[in-house]
Amino acid sequence: MTRSGEPTVVAVHRDAGGRDVAGDLRPGTFLAPRPLCPSGDGLHLALVGTTAGLLAGDELCVQVTVGPGARLHLMEPAGLVAYDHRGGRSSWRAVVEIAAGGELTWDSKPFVVSAGADVTRDMDVTLAPGARMLWRDTLVLGRSGERGGRIRARTRAVHDGRELLVEDLDLTDPDVRELPGVLGPHRVIGAVTALGADPGGPPHPSRMDLAGPGAQIRLLATGAPAVERELTAVWESWRR
Image (tube, rainbow, N blue to C red; front, side, top):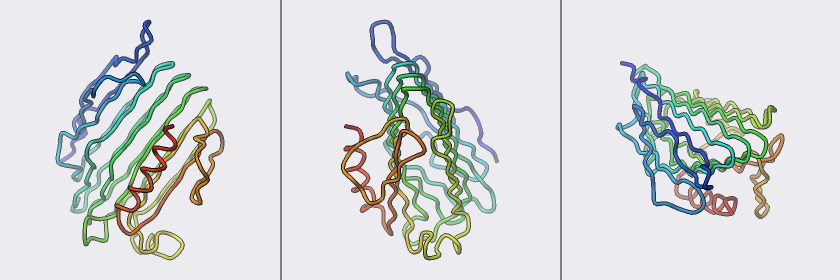
C-alpha cells in the first residue's frame, strides 16, 4: 500500500512591516506544520508527525519556500522511524528554495532505520545569492539491538546557480558499510551543515569546508547520546 498522499508545504515571506509571516502552511500525509511562540528573530514552526512512522510504500515529501529576506526556523519535536518494510521500500524527500537574503534553520531529530527497512532520503536545496541554511540531521541504523536496515541518503545544494554540496551516502549494504574505513562498528551518523555562509566558530577536527560558502561537521558513534551532545554544541555555536 502506497501512502504518497499530499506533501507538507511551508512558505514564508517578509511583509511590508518587516515581519516574517506564513503565506502557506499545509499539512501533508505524514507531517503537519505548527506555529510556535512568536519571536523577533523570525518565524518558528514545528513539523509534527501525524502517523506512526514510515512503512513500505510510503512517500513522504516536504516543500519549504523562504521568500526574500525572510527568516524561518523549523524544528522537529520527535524523530522519525522507518519500520520493517517486509520487502518493500519507502522514501523521504525535502525540496527547499531560499530566495535572496532568506534564512532557514532546520533542527531535525534522529531518523531511525529499523531492521528490514529500505529507505531513500533526498534533500534538494536551492539558495539564491545571500541566502543561507543551517541543517542538523542524524541517521541511526537500527533500534536497540538491531543491525539496522537499508538507507541511501542523497543531498544536493545549489548556491547562486553553482553546486555547493553533492553527496550520495549509500548505506544499503550492511556488510559494506561495516567495513573499516567506512562506518566500522558505528551505527549513528550525525551532521550539522551550513549552506550559503561560513559559520565561523572554533576549529573542529571533523569540519569539512564546502565548494563555496559553507561547511559541514559529521560525527560517527556507536550510540546516539554522545553524537547528540556534540552536535548540539556545534549547532549552538554556528547559529550564533
